[in-house]
Image 1 (tube, helix red, strand yellow):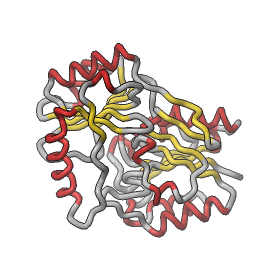
Image 2: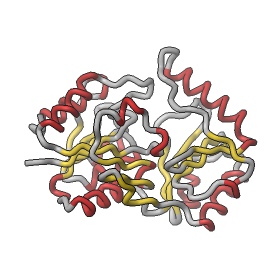
Image 3: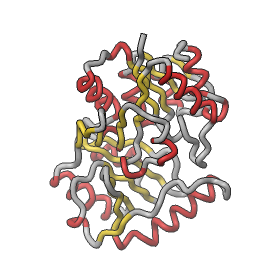
Length: 272
């Protein structure tokens, strides 16, 4: 029976240093050849998807953790912060001395005043990944003021003082907040999306658009922003390198990314 397979990118298909196992590529191609539908479901904005990942030939894309959804070559969902939430939240982050980037499907932007801080953060992250690692991302575009940036789907922030837990306590009833997969030492980081925007909602959008059934959904991920998707799927799988919180809600845990986790999960489910 044909299945709909939703795959995260970072920590699932691609390691943070840029490594993509040949076994993952082969498994995706074999599953497609067997008639299954394969979808990307990532926290990255659409504009930040690598060509070498997109070239694997996906049947649809959930980007910015559900903020922008593409199916059949068309956008079927575009959700972003309301102006009031955007203004209040960014003001609070600035008051807390956070630096942040503002993500849309077509661009990533930072304030001019945050350029030096982001350059330093990027250097620290690349050091953690190693000298041979692919660049984790490119430098965002620069905006002079927050009023120059509209239709923001997600905010990625770093702080030396504010914890994710403290922001959830203050803002959790109005927005969705999860910790970052990777951040420099001595900094906390998180991703903030409009309330109700998550990967599971993106999956639902694709099911509705394609006339598919939830019973056919298989999802694989590794981090906190995958939790809703893993819980929603008929079969939710955690990578061996996943966070404990994701493993706790998954139906089973496959091998880590670097130990052919995707291929082993596909074989366990007789997808290939």
